[in-house]
Length: 403
Image (cartoon, rainbow, N blue to C red; front, side):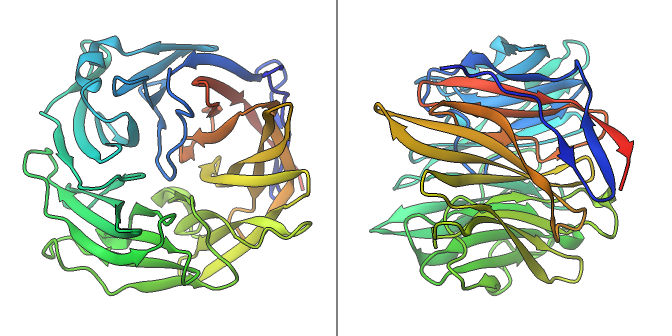
């Protein structure tokens, strides 16, 4: 089965983003992680651009995780000097990276960890600067995410299984990640076993935790204000309710502070549970500057295909959602492809038709990309399959005036 991708064309109302001919290379097999579906684990962020390179943090077989650096076209090199440290830690990561510092929140089964790294100009690489925080929960944890508060501390949140239901738990780590990790704060209990949560930088230096509740068909949010005791959070707030929204695996993205007044405060890519043929099954929810929530449905459910796993990103000054289209099984294999949908700057409308960025391939799924891509930086998306193969799609786009 051919796993190379075609070139893409993306249109917007305010201007036209066109592919630079000769600069786009399609989806190519670039590495094998020896771990099934290594790019899975939403709503984690596993890819970032820093110091002139693209980076990825992926699970690596049975030996924890591995950090990779993109050194050239279709070339990814492992940061082998970190292997000894990372093989002792959980393999699935959510990454925060800013300036010279990087913090990873890690999870695998019931084990969680956090590690702080700092960029070395002398060696041109990331180096650990603290002993990792490692602890175990009594039950499995599906995913973990982190965000930094204005006082420099980090908050993580994750769902913990317990007797057929889940709890939503938040914990605080100091800026230097020294032990001990903060005591668990239960933000909600008795949510359904498929519900997940995400930690997001809030307004005014606060930290927000969002979570799904399929039973109530709700998104909830609670906020922690810097300077308040760890256990003091706002009361649960309903962000959106009803209409069979949301389902599991939402994708979150906070546009940068410099995005402008038109930009939403938050992007949430969702999938509903109606699954009605010919009706939209995905949606981009935006939280605007006034606190109002808006939703734009897209991606039709079809008898022969089903859109899943939407991921929100802020690309070249506007929202973009990547998602997988699951095809019908054929000869024991599922043939999937990956799409990209662009939206207006404020997220209030789709812009142009969805573009196929990874053509039909066996089992390809779980697109991930950086949550923010600045103009001048190529758009890079990774996908993977259950054999551990990882594919990259690089889209070079140039800005051109248009209507």
